[in-house]
Length: 73
Image (cartoon, rainbow, N blue to C red):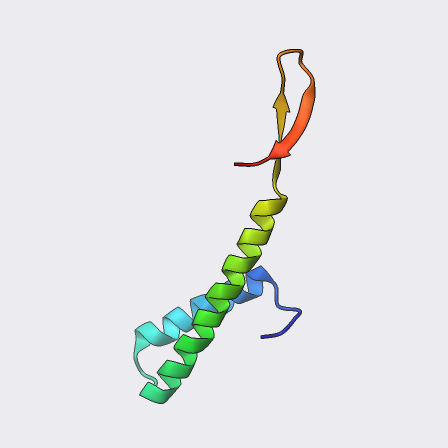
């Protein structure tokens, strides 16, 4: 997997893989390799989402009207 692959690129490729596998017109060996590629892309996407989730913050107003930044739950 390319180090420059973006989440969007990986998601697009996953959609292509789903289409290929649902079509069913590819040989078994190619299907297995394609499935393995899809599994790696899923892991990549989950990792990107997990990383993004850890960076998301929210603004919270306290009783005095002051804003603070907290982790998003």
